[in-house]
Length: 448
Image (cartoon, rainbow, N blue to C red):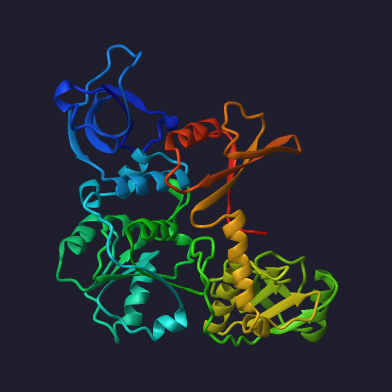
């Protein structure tokens, strides 16, 4: 018998796996999902068995040395899904994110619940059971501790982010309420008697650039689907790419906004200058405006010099379909401006009232329409879409997963679709990732 193995390391090895011989003494122990000890390029490493074969045409193969453990079906499925979504292999994922022995003790639990709440709702939350709060940075860890300390006994919050600190937290069963960095999420097994909070869940820092922008929030939704648990996501507004259930806003929005309405940006800026001929606005905006002596652009919203937020042509829906990504961004900068007492200016070509739009009774139907579109066409929590830009025509790709190509500006543009279900063929996608590894790959998140 033979096993095809992915090396558990910080390298995809160009999405290749390696064949090893299974000694007769281990025939009954080596299974798909087994973690095994191997010799790889004169080093003793661990590997993950992804396939078993009765024959091999490769001579002089190394033997598997021993079996460490074997992932159960759900744990192997979770790793397989997570690796495929993020275009890496399972060996690299295990190396970077998991304590394999601890993770293999994860079982399906009896509770399965997800809530999305706003920051205002979080401030009024009644905390029950034990609670683990995941945050995206050490700065946010301290900020959340300061917010909670008067209403909840926080036994520990991460101050340094090192592994020694984390071990003390994980191994201490007496801790009821802790705040930890989100990149440690996979170090905790999900339990029935713990609530798992993800604070500021739309923060960019939940993405891990070294792992193809693996998003801890996306991982949490997927883990809840497979294993269960009680998860509470705290944010400005739910991200409906991951949260695929109807949701009703409860906050009343009341932002102080000054509107300038004209046919184009140039005329809008002239209106500002006419009203405030001697005032200098140190402004942040998602895009720098053309030069104007009254407007001084600052490219970072948190810069202490910023006194004004300028929002250009806000649009959160199309054809009565909400775009939750655009709404999240809008609320993020509006909340920041309100919290820091910054002036808010909106430039528009039509008369609008952002507060009225946010508080509109139509919001629920817009949310439903976005969810319906995502359910039918993706992307959503279990249906992922990527655009592939290649300078050459791709060969040896499985047409079942690709649309295209379209040819634009001498580029071949494909759409790769991945449905996350029991039928997902991990090895096919590893071959696809190998073929497209030299292409430009963009994850599709919006619906419009």
